[in-house]
Length: 166
Image 1 (cartoon, rainbow, N blue to C red):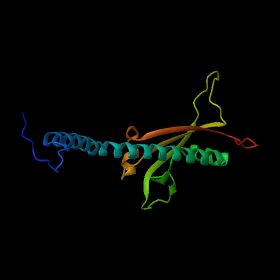
Image 2 (cartoon, helix red, strand yellow):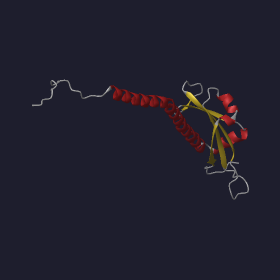
Image 3 (tube, rainbow, N blue to C red):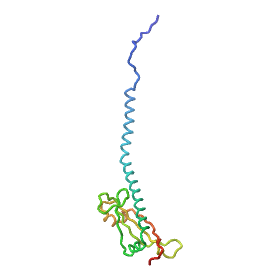
Image 4 (spheres, rainbow, N blue to C red):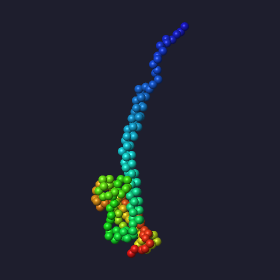
C-alpha cells in the first residue's frame, strides 16, 4: 500500500491577495488620485471663467435693455455730450452702487452713430450704437484707459418714440 503523507487539514484559508497584487492595486489607485487632484486647479479656473462669461452676458443684456427703454432724448444727450457712463456690477451680473464691497465688474458705456448699413448712403439718425468696455480689474480707471485689455460688446438702439426728436 502506497500512501502519501497527508497534511493536516488547515483551518486557515489561503484565499486572499498576494503582496504583489496589493502593491499593484495601491499603485494604480494612487496614480488615479494624483491625476484627479492635479486637475482640480484647471477645473476651478474653467468654472471661474464660465461664471464670468455668464455674468458678462447678463451685464450686456441689462445695459442693452436699459438703453432700449430710455427716452430717445437721453440717448442723444449722452452722445452729444461725448461722455461715457460707468456702471458697476457684482460677480453675478447684478448692478450695484459705486463703492459696494461686492463690486467686481466695471462697464464704461458710450453712445455713437450706428455704422452705415448695407445699401444705405449714410447712417440712420434714428439708430445709435451703444459700446460697452468691461473690466474686472481692481483698478478699473487704469484698465478702462487701455481698451485693448477690456472685453468689448456692442448693441444697436433704435428710436421707438412716436415723435421724432431732432
